[in-house]
Image: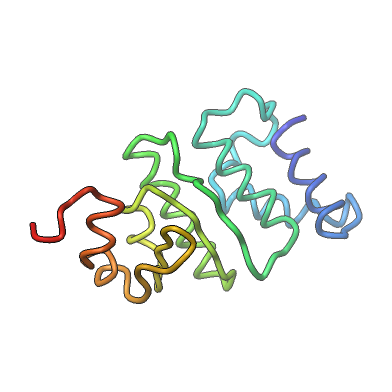
Length: 149
């Protein structure tokens, strides 16, 4: 299916819209997610970054209030990661709440208001992202930096 067809299916079946009623929203999502020039391209021929953009656009086509992201920045170059962070930031600004599980720490820090760090089934850090990242437990467990360094 094309990129546009992917969005129409998501909007129709996931968002409860009629196919033709979904078209205007899908066009908006193509623009918002940087895929307008690829609307007629087969989704399987997209770059990794554009496939991730399409995943986000499909999720947004369902009109969520809460978006769950899991390792969405994985495998991207630094430049691609920056572009993805910009898109996620714009999604958040549009009023969608986001819960994001990610190991690309700089991507998280660029977007999130609050950071929760889990280890062994419990919280080892919670609060302002820059403060949490500086905590001894987080530095040692996730970054391999000894607590006394």
